Structures are given as C-alpha cells and as structure tokens.
Amino acid sequence: MTFGKGFQMRKIVVIGCGYVGLVTAACLAEVGHTVFCLDVDEKKVAALRRGKVPIYEPGLDELVVKNTALSRLFFTSSYEEALQDALLVMIAVDTPPLKDGSCDTRNLKRAAQMIGETMTNDLAIVTKSTVPVGSAQLISSIIASSLQKREVNFWFEVISNPEFLREGHAIADFMHPDRVIIGLESERAEEIMRTLYQPFQHTPQTLLFMDVASSELTKYAANSMLALRISFMNSLTSLCEKAGADIESIKRGIGSDSRIGPAFLNAGCGYGGSCFPKDVKALEQMMRSFGVPSDIITAVDTQNEQQKRMLGLKILSFFENQGGIYDKTIAILGLAFKPDTDDMREAPSLVLIDELLKRGASLRLYDPVAMENTKKILPSSSRILFCESEEEALTGAHAVALVTEWQQFKTLDYKNLIQKMKGNAFFDGRNQFSPEEMGGFGFTYISVGRKPFQAEKFPIDMPQRVVYQS
Ligand SMILES: NC(=O)c1ccc[n+]([C@@H]2O[C@H](COP(=O)([O-])OP(=O)(O)OC[C@H]3O[C@@H](n4cnc5c(N)ncnc54)[C@H](O)[C@@H]3O)[C@@H](O)[C@H]2O)c1
Image 1 (tube, rainbow, N blue to C red):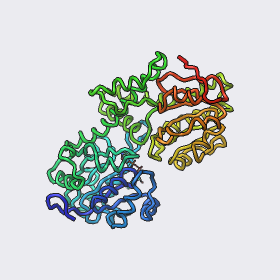
Image 2 (cartoon, rainbow, N blue to C red):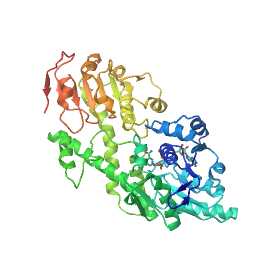
Image 3 (tube, protein in one colour):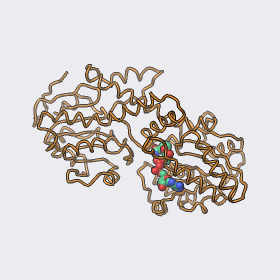
Image 4 (tube, protein in one colour):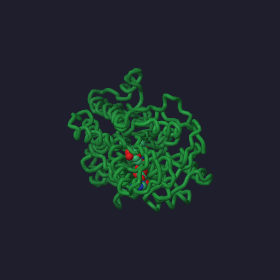
C-alpha cells in the first residue's frame, strides 16, 4: 500500500479495543490502512470478529463490519501475530485513576513490555492513551531493556499523539479533528506520522508537531481547561440562585465575548466520563509530584464533586416539608455521563441514585442506550425499576430528575406525561427547558442557577396556573 511521498505503509497495530482503540482502528482502516486491533480481553476480540461492537458509538458498527469484510481490519489477542512486520503500533489502553488520583500506568507498561518482547523489526510506537508527562521515556526504557535481553537491535521511537475524540461524535472527531497533536524527536518519526495521517487530507496546520513532554501535557491541559470552564460556571450557580440572577443569561453574556466564546459554559449537575474527572485529578497529582502549586486544578475537581451532589440535595430539601423522601418515587431521565453514549464512567447520575437510595426513595430509571451498563453497576434493589421508556419512568413518580440532556427528552409530550405522575416536581440538572415552559405544563420546575417555577396545586387541570417564585 502506498501513501504520501511514495512511502510504503505496512501494517498498523492498535493496542486496546476500547472507545479510542476501536475508533482509531476503524477510521484508519476506512482510509485504506491495514490495521490489526489487539486486546487482552479475548471475549471482546471474539465478539469483534463476529462483527459485534461492544460499545455504543454512532457509525462505529458500520465501519467495523465494512472494513473487516474488506480485510483491512483484523482483531487479535496475540501480540506475536499483530506485531509481525508492523510499521507502527498505537497504544490505546485504558489509564484509569489510582486511589490518590494519579494515573495508573500498569496497562501501558504491560503493553510496552509485550511490544519489547515481540517486535520483529524497526517500529514507531505511538501513545494515543492519555499518559503522564515522562511516559514516553518510561515506555522507551521498558522496550530498550527487553530488546537488550533478547540481544536484538531495532530502531524504535516513542511518539506522543494524544487522542481528543468525544464519545458520541468519535468518528467525525477522528476523521475531521480541529488539530492533531504529535510529540516526537526524529525526522524519521515525523515522516511516518505525516504518512499515517496523509489520507485524511488535513491541512498542514492540522498536524501540530512539538516535543514529547509538551504533547503529553497538552492533553491534560486541554481537558482541564474545559473542565475548568464548566466548574467556573457551576461555581456561580448558587450565587445566581441566592441573588436572583440567571446563569443562562450570564452564559449568553460572556459567551458572546470573542475572547471567551460559548463552548463549555453549560452549568449543570457536574461533568463525568472517563476523561475529565480522571485527567483533572491526574494533572493535580502530576503538579504535586513536581512540587508546583495545583490550587486551580484542585478547585476544579472540588467544585465538580459538590456539583454532582447538588441535584440530590435539591430533591431532598424539596421533599423535606412534604413528609420526606422515604415513600417518594423519583423518575430519573438520562443515566450516561453525557448524551449519545452508553458510557457510565463517573456519571453524575450514579451520585444522585446513591444519594436517593440511601434516603429511602424508590427510583424509576430510563436512558436511551445506557440501561445495560447501568444494570451492571447498580446494586440489585427492590427500589430500583429499570424502565423501557420515558413514559414508563414518569408513570407514578412524584418527581422527575433530568440528568443527561438526550435530545429526545426535549421533545417529550410533558403536557400528557405529567398526568401520569403522582407529583409534579421537575428537577432539571441540565437547564434544558425554560422555567415558564415547564411551569405552563404544571410542573414545579427547579433547575440550576435559575429561579424555580412553583406550580400552585396538583393534580393539574391544564392549563395550570403557576406562581412565579422569586
Ligand atoms: N474514551 C474517551 O472518550 C477518550 C478520549 C480521549 C482519550 N482517551 C484516553 O484513551 C485511553 C483509552 O481510553 P478508552 O476509553 O478507549 O478505554 P477503554 O477502557 O474503553 O479500552 C481500553 C482497552 O484496552 C485493553 N487493554 C488494557 N491493557 C491492555 C494491554 N496491555 N494490551 C492490550 N489491551 C489492553 C482493555 O481490555 C480495553 O478493551 C485512556 O488513556 C483514555 O484516557 C479516552
């Protein structure tokens, strides 16, 4: 296969068949590369060989099935099979947080060890996983000592190429990234990386070359900056509620300033997922380990932990003067950490569920795609009902809590749904509706950083008269 300046691109190996590895492998195969995707999880590999993609990511199933059929995408658990004659290997293993928040690099080290023990020729080794500064050196030393033990001498270079894709938009993000960050040392490595990305027809400005340490830190800096913007807005929400201001107006007011911009200014019940929480904590630990102040980063995380509890506290305080939460049923709309994914890692819904269960509430849960993953995580309880639709979740509930802003929740027929409920409280953790609109359906509507809308009575007789509470 020939790409770029007559460069012969041999096979590419992607280690890790998770969100990043699978998307990377499928997209590289889609533009014509031959890709071996490797995972230690043999069940996952067997399923992928049958065309069964273990995660929900729009468009991914089609790419996997198509490129497997075209013999451009292969799945294996064997490092020997994958690395035989490979030109380039991309490491996309998970790097979860340790108890103290620092990055657990054990999977990374295992992958490096296996590469050193099985590589058969010169090899470019690309780190896609999010890894602490200094990881490329660590991988290099593991591989170098393996090669020394084997008494073989191959050229290799560890290149940092952190991934920025967003779950739910992963294919588009990989195919059309804002920029591709690449940290490397040699011209040989640069030529390989230019060739790798050449079929995507990026502009020269899309590939940003830099030193390895800067590239490794760029990933943490990007995620922490985005998390900081969210936590900053969340830190204003209590003030807004007490002062009678509206966080959504403030968002419009500052987001229209071209120096600030509108992205990542959404106040709500906190960020979750596999990246922001762990990357913020890991950056904080990295700063500590280098003996530099980490106060701003610490505050981002602390604010988020508080924010994740905020919706539960609002629900508890609402029911305090209505006989308590003990015999109440709460419908929860949205469980995944964000829309368009089934990923439950660090999902704010889990904090809410835990809080409400502890206080004796019964829960009716619904998410368009994350039900199976949620069932695996939650303890079995007679007070949890997994529902098949929004309507089933809301039926008989005293209150609704919207936690994940799935688009389909915006267009539900709330005017009719409220009739099926036992109560009329709506807690919107993502500010998806206008208070007046929800008040018009008869809800007492409580959101984040905005004035609530207090419905006067229940059961309702549409249109419900609502009293605006200042
Ligand atoms: N998920 C995201 O949205 C996202 C975005 C950008 C970057 N990242 C980063 O990318 C990395 C991977 O994240 P993910 O969400 O794809 O993880 P994941 O948990 O979905 O997948 C990781 C896969 O690696 C496999 N694995 C672990 N150790 C292995 C080894 N030694 N050899 C072979 N396979 C091994 C696991 O079995 C698993 O299937 C992490 O560092 C993460 O921070 C994730």
